[in-house]
Image (cartoon, rainbow, N blue to C red; front, side, top):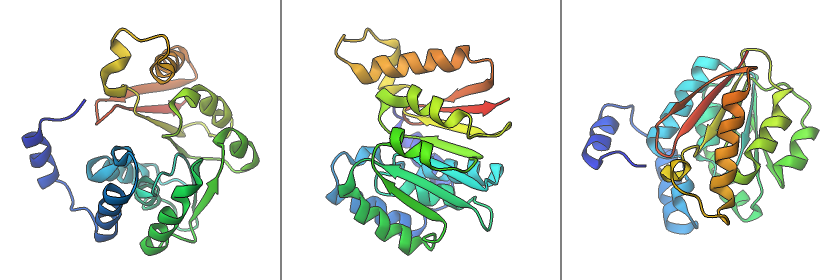
Length: 212
């Protein structure tokens, strides 16, 4: 699901300019990393930054660092002494993310973790005001259950790629585990009376979930 190119161009022309470090990171990712479409990019990055500023989180959890673009955007809204924990399962991406986190000036506030988020999350003993889920789509329900008790009343979970290129409303192949898992996750959140929720049709779908 993509915006009309001319409309997207207009939107970006009326949005704050991408800063130089993020622009360089975007270019580097597209030139040197597999599946660069996974990068949040300018528009989504600005929205994540804006949400973070609105929430003013003391602690953020990000599941799925990739090359660090979204982590840097989210970190901009952290409280002065706040910290962002970001988890990436692919250790080959650690160096590039670390390089740009350093260049961004957020090294002291962003803590990188390499490994399976399902194993790492239980060991992070802090309360998260904001969680951004962008890891393995097959594990969204597991991530949700793991982080729920670590979020205070009024805290937020953001779940990315929730529309999965529109596949969530199409006939699903039996072997398409990612689409099946996202459909199950969306139903799980819809039925969860402990939260309020809305899906934004941004890029591949972004669900905002607020703990009641």
